[in-house]
Length: 213
Image (cartoon, rainbow, N blue to C red; front, side, top):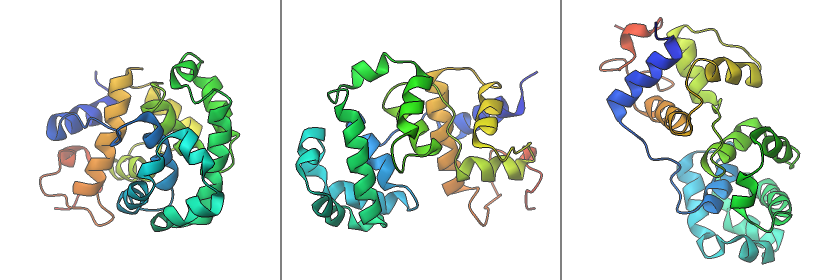
C-alpha cells in the first residue's frame, strides 16, 4: 500500500510535472538565494540577487564590505542581518577553498552539522543548501509543507527533525524525488493551498480533511 506522503508526491508530480529546482544558475547563487529568501518572498530575494549579480562569485563577494553588501541586498529585508550571515557563510565556505565538489564528498550529517554552526543558518536553510547545492537527499521542512500536510490531516510533529525523519522514512531516499517534492509543495502552496485555499481543481482534494466544497 502506498503511504500518504508518497501519494501526495505522486499526485503533485502528475499535476505539476518536474519542477527543475532550484531557480539559480550556479550552486553559489543558490546558496546566497537561500539566505536572502529568509523571512521574505522569493520576489524580494530575487531583486536582491539581481543587485549582487556582479558579485556572484565567492571571492568577489568576499571583497565587499559588509555595509556595501547590505545595501545591495536591501530589497530582501533585514539586510544588515543577512549581510552578516552571508559573510559568516563565506568564512565557512572559504575553509573549503570555495570548492563544492570537495564538500559533496563529505557525509550529509557532517555538512549539515557544519552549516548549522554558521550564524543565521537554521535547519531549513541548511537543508535547502544540502539538497540543491551539495546533492544530499533530504526533505526540507518549511511552512508550506506544514500547511499542506496539516490540512490533509497528517500527523504533524512540532520538532523539525522528527517531522523530517517521518517523511524521509516514507519516501525513497532519492535526490531527484526529494528535490522535486520540496519544489512541488512550494508550487502547490502558491497555486492551490494558499493561506486562503483554492480547493476547486486541487489534485489533493480527495485526500484533504479541510477541503472546501
